[in-house]
Amino acid sequence: MVMVGKMRLKDLLKYDKIVIQCHDNPDADALASGYALKWYFEQNKKTVKFIYRGRNEIRKSNLLIMVKELEIPINYEPFYADEPDLLITVDCQYGEKNVTQTKSKFVAIIDHHKKAVDSVSALTHISSDIGSCATVVWDLIRNEGMDPNDNRLVATALYYGLFSDTNKLSEVSHPLDRDMMDSLIYNKSTITSMVNSNISLDELMITGRAILNYEYHESNKYLVIEAEPCDPCILGLISDFALETENVDVCLAFYVSTYEVKFSVRSCSREVYANELAAFLADGLGGGGGHMLKAGGTIRTELLKKPAKELLEERMVQYYDSFLVIYAKNTTLNTSKMRRYNKVQQTLGVVKLSDVFPAGTPINIRTLEGDVDTVIDNEAYLMIGVEGEIYPIKEQKLMSSYQFTNFVYTRDFEYEPRIKNTVTGEIKKVLQFAKTVRSTGTTVIFAKPLEQPVKLFTAWTEDKYYSGRVGDYIAVRADDEHDIYIINKDIFDRTYKPLG
Ligand SMILES: [Mn+2]
Image (cartoon, rainbow, N blue to C red; front, side):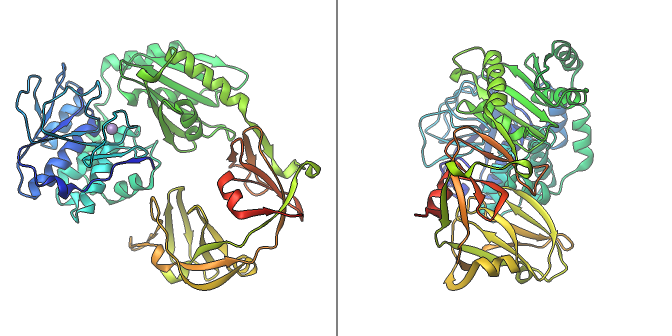
C-alpha cells in the first residue's frame, strides 16, 4: 500500500477547537468518514464541528436520505470564517482544488486518494490503495480500541461509504476493505433505500447518451464509452451493461471533470485482468485497481499533457500491443539462449494450518493478494515467501525442499494475513503460528530476463495468468519443459545464483 504519514487519532485529542471538513460536493464516502470521525471525538468527550463548503449544497437524493436517516450532523458553510485550532480534511487533501480553504492553525489530512499536496506533517494519513476513506477512518478508530459498531448509524454510514466508492463493492480489492465489510453491523433497509435512489432522471439520460456514443475496437473486442461528468456509479452501470454485448470482452467507461478523470473497467476476457488494465491506464497519473473482472480508477486532470480521451485511447492500444501471451502447456522455450541457475539457500516462514484451527475446519485465508477458502487437513501448510507473499503447500513438497530451523520467525507485513474459521467467525492472525524453514533447494532452472511484458498461463492455471514486466525473469525447470513461470526481478536476484 502506498502510505504517506501514519497518524494516531488520539494524538488529535489535544486540540481544543476542531473542525472536520469534507470535500466540496460531498459524496457518501466523505460524509461517512467525517461522521465516524466526529463520533470518535464525541466518544472522547470532545465537541467538534463537521462541515462542507463550496458552491453547491447536497442535492442528490441518496445523500439526502443518508444525511437524514443516519442523522449525520453536517453543516453547509459556504462562508465559514472561524479559525479553528485544528482542521481535519477527510476524503480529500487540504490545498486541493476540490476543497474550499478554511483557515486553521493546524491541518490534518485523512484520505485514500493519491497524494496530491506537497506538505506532509505528522498529521497526514493517506493510504492510497484503500477503497474508501471510510475504511481508513474505521481502521484508525479500531486502532484506538474502539468499534464503530457501537453506533449502528455510524456503522451504516461507513458501509455505504465503501459501497458507493467501490461501485457497490464490486471494485473492492484491499483486504482491509474486506475486513470492514465483514465486520460492520449496518441497517440493511437504509442501504436499500439509498441504493434505490441513486440515479436521477438526468443521470438516466446521461447513461443513455453515453451508450449511444460508444466506440468499438473490433480487433481486440473492447468498447470505450465517454459519459458526461456524473456520479461515478453511473460508469459502473454503463460498463456492466455494455459488457453483456456480444463480441465485447472489455469495456472502459469514463468521464472527464474539472478535477479528475474517473473510469470503470470491466473484463470478461481471460487475457485481460480489469485491475491490471485499470492500474495501467492510470499509471503515474492517479490510481486504479479492483479485481480481475471489475475495476476502476482516477486520473488527476492537472497531470495530463493531452486530452484525457486521447490518453486513454492511446493507453488502451499500448496495453494490448505490449503483452505477449504464453500458454505454458503448449510452449517450449529455447533454452540455448538462457542461463542455468539454482536456488540459493533461503529462509522462509511456514504455518501448519492445523495448528491454527483443527483439521476439518472450513477457513478463509485473507492476504494482501486476496481471499482463499479451503478446508484444513493435516498435510496443509502456508508458506510465507521472501517478499511476504503467501501460498499453500502440501507437507510432502515442504519436507522435500525445506528444513525446519529453530529460529523464531518475524517479519513486518503491510497487511498481516489472517485466517477465519468460517463456522464460528473466529479470526486469528498467522504470524504467531509461523515457524522458520530453510530451503535445501537443488532444483536447476533455465532463466532469462524478459524483454517484453508477458502474460503467462502456467500448465496448471488455464484461467489465470501471471504478469511479467520487462526485467522480470521467465524460467523453466530443467527437468520439465512445460513448467514455465515468471519470477519477479527482485525475488530472482535474491533467490537464484547462476551455475557455471
Ligand atoms: Mn472516497
